[in-house]
Amino acid sequence: MNDQDLKQFLDKQASRFDCADFVCGDPIEVPHRFCNPDDIAIAGFLASTIAWGQRKSIVKSAHQLINWMDGSPSDFVRNCTDRDLEPFNRFVYRTFNGTDCVSFLKSLRNICQNHGGLEKVFADGFASTQSVYGALTHFYNVFFEIDHLHRTEKHLANPEKGSASKRMNMFLRWMVRQSGTGVDFGIWKCIPQSALCIPLDVHVGNVSRQLGLLSRKQNDWKAVEELTANLRQFCPEDPVKYDFALFSLGVNGEM
Image 1: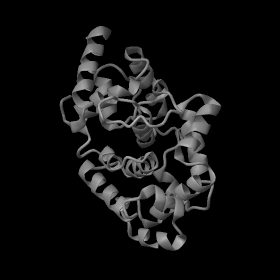
Image 2 (image 1 turned 90 degrees about the vertical axis):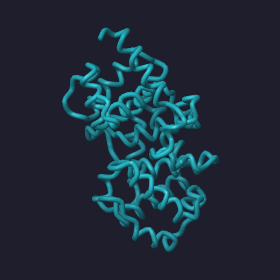
Image 3 (image 1 turned 180 degrees about the horizontal axis):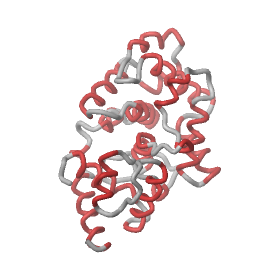
Image 4 (image 1 turned 135 degrees about the vertical axis):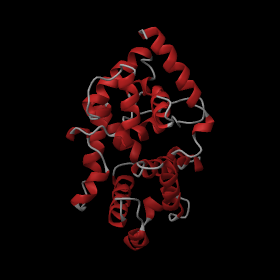
């Protein structure tokens, strides 16, 4: 199909899936438990951290993690002691184990207590480079500035190492994008939604290649840049709205 037909197709599919029904059963369901922006950010970050595998299992484990924080993730992270964190050594989701969980919570505590919170760290990274790439790499460096096991680093992607950073781009979509449909939150103003990058996973990659939107074979950061640039031609102000179409068509087996 030509570019105009492809745009019409993608717009139609994006509208089809970018609706309230999308929330239930998706990891974004977890931060939707909250109204407070700080709770949304912490719950969203933790849910996106373990967002690989079956969505049902992701959602169940993420809710469990939040429940262990007495349902108040922001207050817990800001005020927890090392002793408060000891029960989280029992948390396991696939390869994200208790040691990783405690390390992540300590890093979040450091960010909240010493760096002004999650939004401030991303804002600083974006301000210095005017790019999501810069925001993600800056966040990665701040996140791991405290003592941690090397194995834990694999659970936070770094585009500087070539990673597609799917889960972090998804998290930023949740926080930044103003969808008007009640799915994404749009509570962070530090990054324009026009600058967001597509959360690239196997489903998005496969559908994008079938539609001629992506030529690169690897699902890496260069592929993210290529695909996002192509999607910006269709909607410069909101390129990642097409994540709903590409992901849902792939995961539902419609392409």
